[in-house]
Length: 160
Image (cartoon, rainbow, N blue to C red):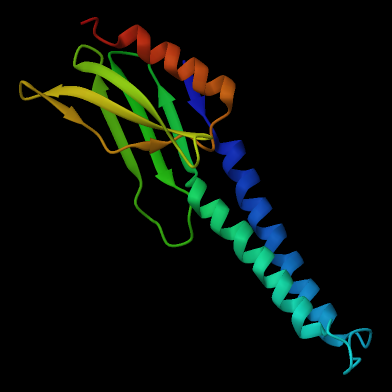
């Protein structure tokens, strides 16, 4: 079974780009409109630009807090393949895990971002000890794919 959220990542990038373009265009339009030039009014164009900027910042911070990851999973063959990396402007680190099915111990799905999103923690036997990998955010993975992923990982988890 393969799980790949590349389409969701494209949607996230497109949404970020559209919001940024709309923000920039709205600030430029407000600056050149004479509608908000009344000096006696409390609603000057600068107040409107500040309000729009605050909305843009809030939307951006929420997007960063969700911490979306590109995620790929494949369980064909004798290994479990995971590829993932955070979707951000300044991140170039791409991660890849290959866990032999016989060494896979368990996984845990932990909630974050006010309990609305999940992080996946993987465990494997490595040098006769249980090793835990850093968590992988599943916020950009569809709910159906999350369910399929958990079912597949349960199939390979050790029964203790």
